Image (tube, rainbow, N blue to C red; front, side, top):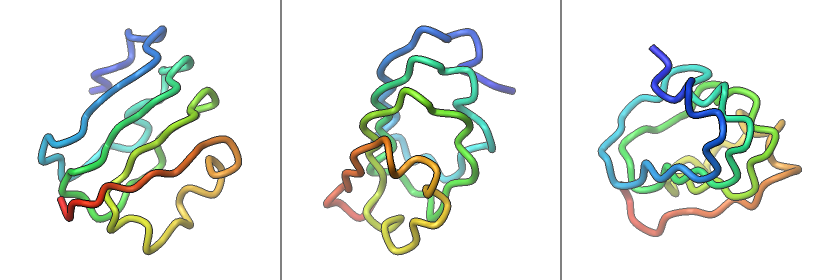
Length: 88
């Protein structure tokens, strides 16, 4: 169920340009050292709870998600939000 659960030392994860349409709640839960997460250029319109991403510094998202940032309030203080200029 949690693909990344045994990758606890992972620091960077690039899932961009994969035509992902849904991310399961807490999909990145055990990635305690994840600093860079690239989800840009995918097909989802919203993201559920990502889990505790205490080490995250850069989060790349599809630009359409920047219309509603309410779900990211707990992360905004510790990350740099970057958007993809592409629509996917």
